[in-house]
Length: 621
Image 1 (tube, rainbow, N blue to C red):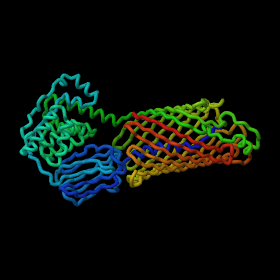
Image 2 (cartoon, rainbow, N blue to C red; image 1 turned 120 degrees about the horizontal axis):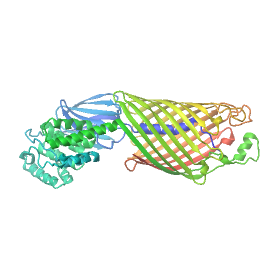
Image 3 (cartoon, rainbow, N blue to C red; image 1 turned 90 degrees about the vertical axis):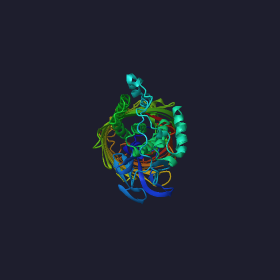
Image 4 (cartoon, rainbow, N blue to C red; image 1 turned 135 degrees about the vertical axis):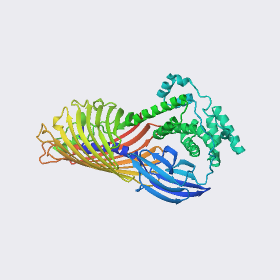
């Protein structure tokens, strides 16, 4: 028979979605500096989770005062303090500031020094060359990239707009100011030969070969304007903008008026998605009186940067997901219906029909959803959001249990420091043909949530929900439900980045009217606890285990046992799920899981066991 799941049981699935969003945040957990010899100082920044890309603006340096600036999105400061002083040659201190969901790390230097940045496991290593040779300040002047090549670096929409312009047909065959001989023929004959060879490769369209030629020599010639500039161009044109920014910054530290290097630095920042840094450099190029065709390219870049900024303000995300599985007890029916009726009501020979029949079958499912968010106040961290999900499940040979779900939501959130507040309204529809009597249900609700971070490893979530489930064919099952919940997330230190998520919830359902038989009502109280353990043994692969325990207590005698005087039905439901989540490709997720449910009841008719195994594939857009 169909089992009426209490609110505490449903909250299991909602909390898993909340937890998944929390897990995405990274944090800085350690910061150290050491001298590794060869006049090199290494700053080691350790994270709770491995970085997938170099941070925005990697290698971005400023000269007044000398400093390295690194931006980490979706990252918190877990050090417990905003600054750190060092006693080391060349490196003075570091400061960490958090704004919303992003963190900026600034490393202050005693003087402008070349640096190299790389990812190693869960650490980011910043190697500073303390005694690097200084380049001749009288080096290069300006190089202006060809407009057609620049146009090809823009997104397709911007390329189309550029090609519409007559200016797009103009190609700058030579820089506005020719490169002086010192760029390709520095004092050292060995480096001169190296640069001429690299320059020839680049003119033949072999930028990757030029990069591979120059990269091993970076430690030897870093600081030479000619080397740094060609190395930056080779890195940029071979798809390594992070390395290009480091080289171009070294050039500009020596000669701030080198317009070509500044233009290519802006392009490198743009390719990395560091739009604020790119905008600053593009606007500086415009102040240096570039040719008209270069102005046109810069303006197109600035337009695209503005478009990307608007995209961050307003975002639309969608997904599609398909799954297959097997459910051992679709109707949550007791395996011994006849004995259950006999034990509960002393009625012998009862035969199960409809939803009381035990069914086991394969199923397939398809779901999709869309979410919209808009930032309305960056200063106060206020966002509006709305979303919808549609799901369908089809059972083999048990068409009566096929079902469809529609869920709608809308509301707003506000972030203030370590606190995030969220208020939302929800509406859901559940449709199921059923066995003679349909299981159609509509539910409207309102929820409020307060999420607070305690450092980078702990987070608490408090929420309150009010909902009104309404059943089309069974008005006696209609209730007004209140649900209170408290959750805690902790990320442990150590290998595999283990974490635990725990939840405690309490629900109360108040019936709107008595049942048609017996005069009882379906008032009930539910209490539930949940614990979720997750760890990451491999990149892009997570293992998890979730255990849940829920108690439902009927508050009205005879609510599920008409004829039994002063009998209050009580159920204890235990859930255990295990599985693996893999992300083999960008925006693709594959999940396999097994969920076991065991429901014990003092009313034998409601005792059952259930196992559901499934595999799902999801594509995010």
